[in-house]
Image 1: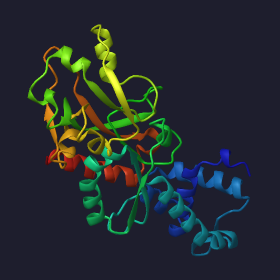
Image 2: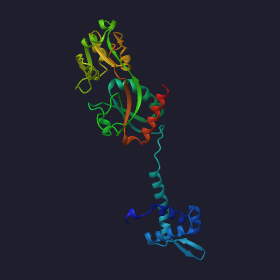
Image 3: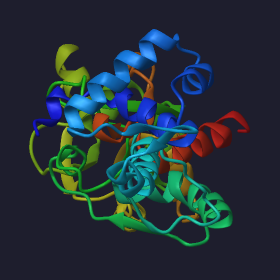
Image 4: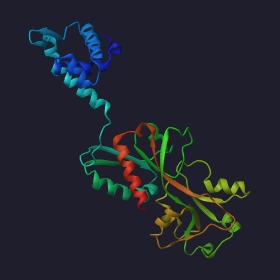
Length: 302
């Protein structure tokens, strides 16, 4: 049989006919007219090549095939109903793996509180922090992670990504407390200083360099690092200045050899916005929907 020619509504009518064994009673239960149910019965008889209901001295009875298919039909309709209903996610019983990725310091800043909440409410759900790649959004694109924590934006078509803003922060300078510029600096002094730059890809200028170039300036980048976690070690007891999002700079203040200073007057930089991104493929995934609701609750309470 070609299933495309089968009207699934007929199976619902068939189930009630097998239960009631009477056209009028089936029509009442289905809230259909008796002629409509009679037409449906006729179509079922043609499709199954079986009378389904047979007349007896006491009314109607089921044919032998109808008796055989009645338990099968009930299970089939239950299975179809299960397929069509939205999947339910119970965090207290959920198992599986939830995967996040992001840059080292961004994850340190954003993820611990998230993990604590998820562990409390979904104790059987395993959480993995997947190492980031040079192309920031690759893991999302390839379906290898559920969420990406980042302050960057995708360079490709963006309509496949959804996002949730986590925090907004400004830029500041981080330097050794004995750096002469810690007492104050103007734009020329800032540009002439020795700068450190965190470059995840190892390519191209930093965002600050682009802004300075538009203003006709070029700073001296004397050290390029591949991650944020090592900034304090390289900055302490040196002449290097790092320009970082304030939320990251404050985290580095665990090293008491460093100080935070504002950018010089005349250097205006846009705020940095950190997001949780996810791919469109997980927009309706029950587990990811629940995780997003927990993230929203966390952000609302900040």
